[in-house]
Image 1 (spheres, helix red, strand yellow):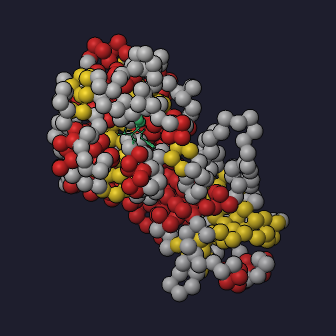
Image 2 (image 1 turned 60 degrees about the horizontal axis):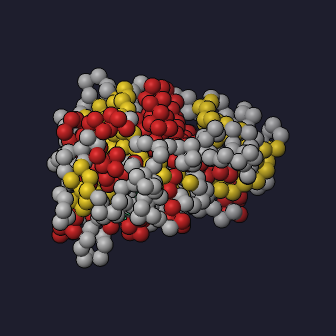
Image 3 (image 1 turned 45 degrees about the vertical axis):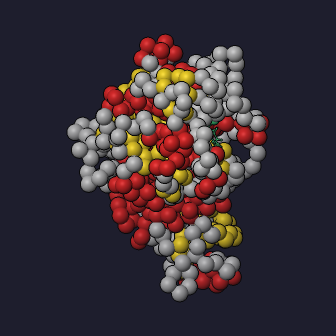
Length: 511
Ligand code: BES
Ligand code: MN
Ligand code: ZN
């Protein structure tokens, strides 16, 4: 299973637990780092006597600062035989700090059966309805995620169980459950992203979406190739035309009673991006099974809405195609007709994401009239060049929507940076033979991420719209913190914090 660790709120104390690892939180403190021993079940003097040295001396010995995620480990007998004791840096115990600490604890506990910690007893962990505790659980679970198709996966087994001593109040248990729900949504998205495209074709991904919808209580609808033709989704069909595995469009609906507004989420679902006839070199192609990350992120978020008690209605649109090469592939210079009736000159078949999204946007604008349209896509290598792998690019036509998403990103620990929709660049998308070209032909030094965003904006029908280009942070090259090597499902948590965080999703409250 992808997320291997189970979290259990438990009563009692650390020393009652049969854990083979016990983690004591170390806060940064005002002057010097402080180890919190609440929940140890031993008075401070007895605890000191059972450790290799008094806890304050150990903090000094290991030169701990209390920074979040810092770890020092040693063996000690706390009364029930030798266990591993971990001094775990929790910083100032903000939700961001506790998310890092949870991840660090689970990474330090690899190969162990049960870990126990008193982190839940930190006063700050229960502030804000337990936001810190939720983040701690989320970080711990995400760090235990792994994906492997090897017959014997390398490395130590992930920690089996994490006991949160004292997290038994209703509020604390609910916070832990929220963290779990968000982590499971992310894990689902990561699994889809990490699945190789040999298995993952458009029909497969659409079937997974329908399956998820039925477990999560969502309505679903799938357009197969014939339905896409019937309804005029010319851009999705064009991108899928070079593959033996035909495209799909999936619509999912979450409808709470008396919804506080309606949001449409669109996720780019390219199950493999060869570049098409504008073929990618192998180095750029080899990780392109992840080019459906947007669709996976949206699907992951959809799976968690009911569990989080989300009050806004949400429709997901997942345009899914394989961008491949064959005699039937769309050619550079071809002109295609999008759902909204506009013609697009395809000058580069590798700029395929914006094409499939144009059809989904056209459908949203014509048929759904939501309060906000938000898309997630591994859209451009340029976004990765601009912001690296740590930060997503945010574009928006609406100040308050941009603000709400940036704030959710802050809370979810998935940083985004807003880039401008520079109007002067729009003209490079003018075509001599069609309404628009899919890539720029101008001399603005190829502002690739902005060009793509300006192309998408054409299809939003003036709706309040925001675009997350996650080409950079969508993949991780190592196991670190809450990330594991491979697909990160970046922005799943952001969407959930935005939609389910108790704040209005658009403006002063969606209509
Ligand atoms: N899927 C790629 C973007 C991408 C690049 C995602 C690197 C993740 C990592 C997208 O379809 C693409 O090929 N974009 C082109 C656009 C260009 C042809 C205008 C790009 O970024 O090079
Ligand atoms: Mn491409
Ligand atoms: Zn792509």
